Image (cartoon, rainbow, N blue to C red; front, top):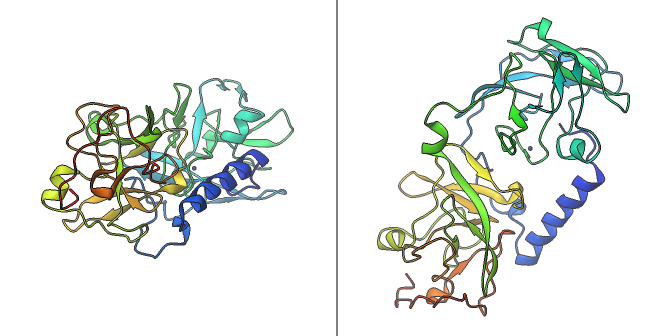
Length: 319
């Protein structure tokens, strides 16, 4: 979401996430190379040169990157987006994110000032944290990573609350370009549906489904043409955001036959159902004994369960 030693809480969360995957069968982390690593629509290019900061306890690096929809932001040496916290202060620099907050938002620490390519060295300094460690500051603002940004090019912490924002090379808050976020955003959320329990939803709150004929981790979709009109694939549009209770390590994408990018969760391509009339409906669950609502952990909802609403009657084709 920076590969410092993980906190006990973060490690426990990671183990729990893997356990959920294992409970469904094949671990998507070990599937064939056809499943593309998640980029969530963000295109990032690290600056060609990053200037390393020496540290007695380790090394901190800064790099500039471009995240689609946000523009230029700061990142660490591994490409993880850096953030600023509104409850900190810049004049004078002061840290407010400690303890549990710092587990979720690991501070970028170093024993000496970090210099960054394309960043004014006069903006870069250090502040002493309450535990005595030195944290890098930009324009006076202490900088952090986000624990759920599990790879380079992600900015899932952007506006996760009103207090957090990606930080620019000038120390300002990164902001989405006008019209970009609303027009291009794809969102994964969750909802509780009577009779089924928690399920994944899209940005409009519609239930998401998997198609067993696709095959877990196959890297392709078998639902095209008429099938895709009934079961529209959830496509990647620009940046993708993920709700707090969804493990970002489960989220990926595949390339469909028409060249579009489709979201996958736990190795399964995900779809909506055209006959679900409103958020909270899951009338496609069990259709054709091949379509099932998908849980937040990437598993299909138990086929024996039934939503409170009537189940759609499946055609002989399973569509």
